[in-house]
Length: 479
Image (cartoon, rainbow, N blue to C red; front, top):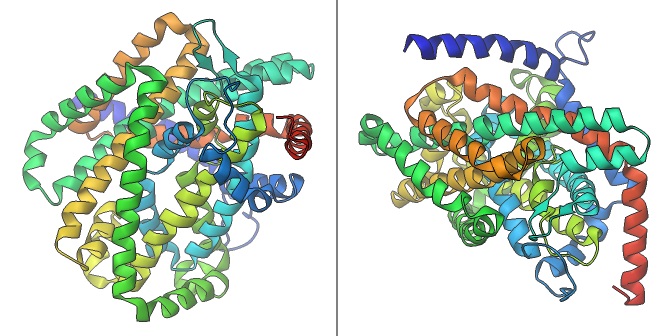
């Protein structure tokens, strides 16, 4: 326990330093205003890329669905997995506890209006996803055995080298890889184990006394999947993601239809709160920041993580997979996060005095559990199952992201070392309570967006040229 305490205190110091940079208030000169650097970074990037690529998130939305369904598939496509499996793998990493816990905290802290800005940022994030995943396809490396290595660490290194920025590219690629590895251990790994265990223990108290057994179960089930590489991960994600998303959406729709008469009022609260929030919610900027922060943490647009999964997809043109990836923020944020927000507003759970302990304690998953349990007693147990699937799918996908970046730094032959370290950390995520260690992992995931978006900006002209090339070939029927 003394060792755990010492480690926790050490990471608390690091977290304070890193957070002071990432969440530096850009509006420090305005009394009462707070606009964190990281939040502004992702929002501005999404807006700029949406304009630069002429609203590709809207213009090619239907086309992206057709590509995902395999309508334009070709036998000449090169890669490891299909468009749908790549999308499922990336979604399994982004659709996690943030959709359940994070949204609940955002609404209880920023008010219903945060939902509006969350949706706006989700739509803008579609363009960021398109850009980074197109680059991942353009610069991916396919080995002789067919194994693909791709993602920001590759296009930062190779892409910037082509622009005579070799040293910058090498620095940014190594920085991204290190951040991703740490993120996979923390936010994508031990945090998921710990938070899912806490949520399930609120319904099954006996789990608290057998946390080691839960940790062992996670280690075994995750280990059996990740040893098989991206193909096995994609096969599992292909089955889990549609099921868990559908179950969660159906539960949400049941509650919404059950309270259909309250939906117009809830929508008015969301719209009114977005532009004229009460002072208790921190004013207009407070609501805006809460919505943007939740969107950024939820769909990971701009962080570059999903680009690693999409680099493995079978395509005839890099832009194809870029278009598939833009569906992620829409599914993750615009649909699933909005469902959670509406249920929180309609049930009134976000400001219920009986839940004040959960709100002040930032226990978002437990708060959401209470909101959904008001509809039907079975929803408590169904949501527990969803929480487990969300956490499990996030772990297996992030394990792949961490493994690929580890391979980039240390070589393919040493990937088993990473897997052993990850599984060990997952086990301790269930029995330890080093909150600052887990927060460190979250900060590392957020940090990935800085080197990644610098590379995306510097390589934006190549993406645009590839987009025009794709459109021309598609219209001419020569793909």
